[in-house]
Length: 338
Image 1 (spheres, rainbow, N blue to C red):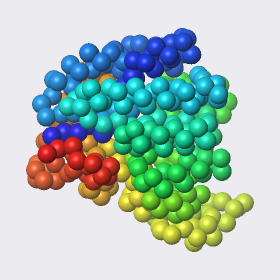
Image 2: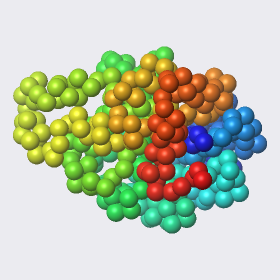
Image 3: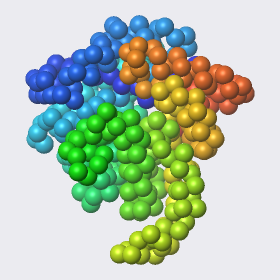
């Protein structure tokens, strides 16, 4: 069995509502309308059925709701997404045996209420983004969310979020050539994790279960900087005593990035990135995922290529099964494969 732990879909009730709320919002329009498998259930089922012994866990895609909705609309919109997933997965258990609740930290109180409600309604965990309209995750107003997830013990899927309005150079107004996505999202993932580490959020809430998308972005490639590099943190800084801060952490910085997270195998068909991730992270913290349906074929491409890479590595069947479904079952505390 192959259980795809990070795929994206928009339930029909929210597709209808989103058109009403967002209109032709640029983030939604061009990209989402061009990928029918993100919202058309019949198209999506054909994609899933084209792979034997394969099923998907569903999450909402981009953009974050706060990019187009008003604060007082967020809780109702979250309910539409989450109830839509619950209904869909109840009817299509073989193809979609689980779903992830959506939160919006732009409305922290509402998100905590909705997360608790959604988990009671069957959600395996919750998805948030690497920033909240440009604000870092370690702001005090978001702490109640992490406290709630620490208490609930359910995983947090963290999805990178950055748009073209985030320039790559200080004298420009926007990011060109989709650098904001190709490189920026992988940086976002690492930066968000760093803020949770050095703010001591992870130390304070040791029961947090964090899933980083795309093998943790740039993290595996920067093992030396995160390890021996950050062991010397503060050497390049004159206005803060970062060595004193490091001394108050419960672990070496590298340990948080390597051992305190789970990651998925969605590497866009990149063999080198896959090998790097498999080498860096503990085996039991690696989950199979494809990021369906955002490949050039708009559905099956990344699934096929990710499976092809994993199956080509000569991994023992038990180890391969761990990645394909057992690690995920252990993480969420639920059996999917008999």
